[in-house]
Image (cartoon, rainbow, N blue to C red; front, side, top):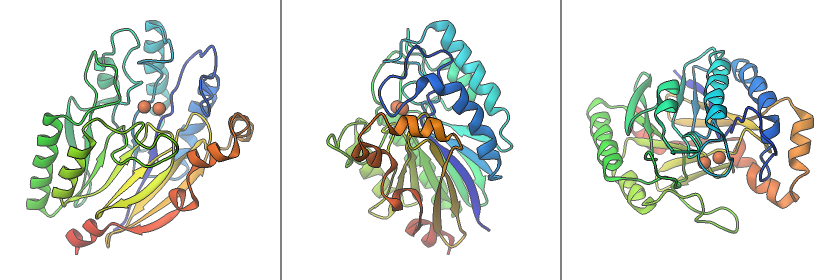
Amino acid sequence: MAVRFALLADSHYHPAAPKDFAPPKLLTRGPEILTATVPAVNALSPEFILHVGDLLCGGGSFELSRDQYERSLHDVATAYAGFNAPLHCVPGNHDCDAQDHRYGDFARTFHTPHVLDVVELAPRLRLVRAHIFRDGEADGGTWTDALDEALRGADAEARADGVVLVLMLHAWIHPGVGDQPTGGIITNAARLQETLAQCPTVAATFSGHRHANRIRLFRDYLCIDTACLIGYPLGFREITISDDGWLTARWHTLDLPEILAHSAGLSAEERNQRWAGEFGDRDTTVLLPRARAIWQ
Ligand SMILES: [Fe+2]
Ligand SMILES: [Fe+2]
């Protein structure tokens, strides 16, 4: 029995942006993009929806007032309540408030974990959600002792139960895109990579943050990194995992051609291609070797 779901990243809703900020983001078009997202996702009838963080424009860079932060939480929660399937999120670095960098209101609104938790997605498939940010700290996320211990514990339980894990966290785990290949990589990435090597039930990981599409096998686990929903390439993923361990990814662009063209027009073609990824970073079918080994 296959499982099919939607995967969203970096939607960066701002209720009243004074400007668009750096391309490809079009923050002034946030309300239209938010409105278009829910029917586009529902049209696919996914079993569940994953969002890998930066739903909002808090934290650094965007000068969001306290009132705007509270309105953002309300607007996005109200819109996403229209999803016809359960939504599972992890926080991004822009999901805290901009004044004190606290994640409590976001966690209460979107039911995100304090450190790490495990969600049953389907028979023999569990989602591990990692919160890689700490209150009061403005950084790109850290793989901490607590996260490491919790992931190893989830892996031990999954091994005992014959279950496959997928891990979601906001930042990238492996470098390798563009002229700043280590930008946007989680602090202590080497330790997380070593832990993933030693946790054989983790078949795939899902991240956002760098606003670029990439699908790569590292060792024997697949990393799926997803571009932003607030500008070019203006879309999200549909993912299917079959019970013999094949993963199929399909890219869906929002039906907002004027916004797509506007965002694309802000940057050179080469930069747009980096965000969109190669064809196989959007649409592909690849084996999840660890899922195949466990499920068979
Ligand atoms: Fe982002
Ligand atoms: Fe981010």
